[in-house]
Length: 482
Ligand code: G6P
Image 1 (tube, helix red, strand yellow):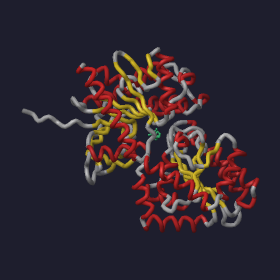
Image 2 (tube, helix red, strand yellow):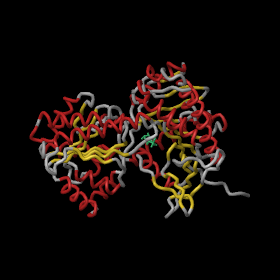
Image 3 (cartoon, rainbow, N blue to C red):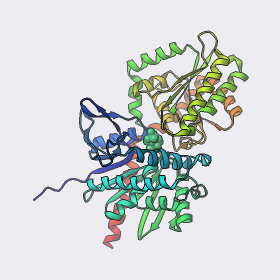
Image 4 (cartoon, helix red, strand yellow):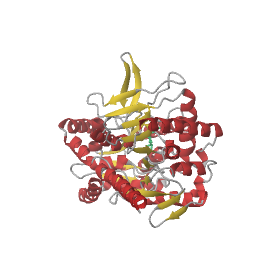
């Protein structure tokens, strides 16, 4: 008799922990850096399972099969299963519907949204490809965990074929108010898609509220707002707010590493100023890079004593470069950097150091250690893990976190200096305060922040989800047993 396999996790997301690259020795998985990866990969490494994702490359042919690889290569722990996408699908589904419609919509950039029915139909088709790949892997007792706005239809597509399969969904970006969502011609389909899951998670309760209001208003679903439950097609769907954490101990260890510390010292000497401010993010219009540069420029205009003494290091990680809005932003950011440096450079002093590249983890932590103030000032952000990473890396509890009130993390991170990134003058004055903050005040705030980030770390986040799923299973058992 065939041995019954232990239940496994099938992770599904548009981008996984690896991008696939064709080399002379065949297809190689190249690690991808993102918050989602650092959050869920340790879980898969520990428990095993399958990660179904696009490999970030153009499929060689229309019907090319997806690559299946044991990963990490040096010590395989789970399977990476590629969902191959053609050039047309990448254009219409990834650059088009997900990043030209859903992304700006969920971040309240209505003027950037482009709604196109061909892009929508490709989104439906690509979601079905992901669902099919997950279904091929799923056996009785397995759990499918789907992530993010790229794959909102997958839960219902799976539910339709395998109604008993356990499903999680985590929405990693803001969930907009239903008035805004209603501008999307296919909003009801998106909501019906999500309601295929058993448990749906968001970073904040306000996103949960927006989701519950949307299903009530746009679908007429019955909702128990007190318990975050939706009643839909004879099923109960539980929603919950679980803000993602970071691996606090791993950042602390990295910050203790002598090589990292030496590198931080070198960076400080290289930039050669008394006060170093740092920003790190994907080059994305939601991140408020331009507004921050304007505030930095205003600070140097209004408070000239910072000229020659304070510099901003802006690391902008290349992102979605085929989407026109991202290309335009790059030009605008680079023009602003050029203007500010042209106005305020003096001898070897540069007020802004701009890098258009990503950084490996160790180098990133060296920058976190070198920075006296960390500027995380998005116009809108689902949560923001960079803010938590900075806090987790500050071993001596010095440093100031300047955080946008429109970053989801602002709700948790009491102790940060909050700013409104739309108010350039106000932001410039807050930068001045942050640069002047004394050591005792810095430590008081940083300890508060560290306590929060340490307690609500990545293990806490995974446990929350796990418990929600167990509660859901017990409830199902009660219903079927009664
Ligand atoms: C956000 C999304 C992720 C996405 C990441 C990078 O954090 O929530 O799902 O993977 O941005 O964007 P990209 O388009 O490069 O995958």
